[in-house]
Amino acid sequence: MLGESTTAALRSAMAYRVIVAVAMLALSPCVQADPQSRDRSREFWAGADASAHVWLIYTGATVAPYGDMFRDGLRLRAAAGYGAYTYRGERFGQIQSFKAETVFSDMLVGYLKRLGPLTAKAFVGASLIQHDLHPFDLQNPVQGLAYGPKAVAEFWLNMGPAAWSSLDLNWTSAHQTYAGRVRAGYRFLDEVSFGAEARVNGNALDKDARGGLFVRYEWDGGEISLAGGVAGRFLEDARDMTDPYATMTWLIQY
Image (cartoon, rainbow, N blue to C red; front, side, top):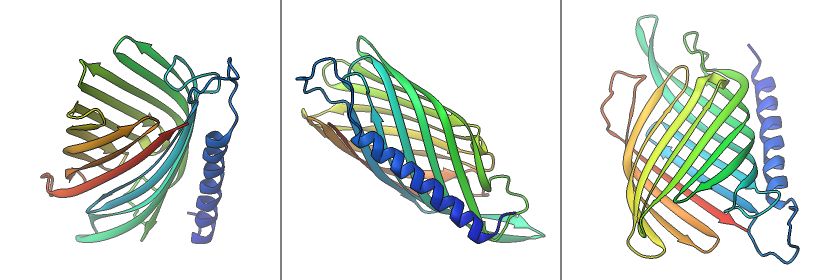
């Protein structure tokens, strides 16, 4: 087991490298077929997520190195996040509480393909995830630094002039971490969508499910999305959907 100073140094070094990678992608020059083109070739986002037991902040950038973000082609992506969570478990005949900090980073390459009303993205690459537990939990396989391949699939479907749906899936062998989210929205105004979402997150130890509502405000070159609802964890005895959650994401394209 690594000492606290060693794990802190590893966490800081990993976070620094990924923040640099995100900044390089967000600010890097892109090759354009038409030097006079005003097409957007970069996308940057940041957000926060919180529930009764978990909080997370995250950021990332995607670049279309040879063209516009909305056209078919190669994509490069880097992302990172930092957060903390708590959980409980029976150890030696009594219930014990644990606190944990986590940091992750992704480096991915992918492709965007438009198929009529459907836009599909697929990415592959590598992910690093670290979990630092306090106190040490002998029965928790999700701790320490892990890395491995990662796969991401994202779909957006326009269902007529106002309705749309999306599906986001990702998995990595690092701590067997995965997530999935489905949304269905309706544009009540040109810029404003309301809708419902469902989500599942998990790893080798735990998983939770969520269900809620969202509002999405979009403009030419960006969007802000707010979501909230209820969540339930499967690690502890109480599995009913009683924990509130809230998520906010801000995205720009340029």
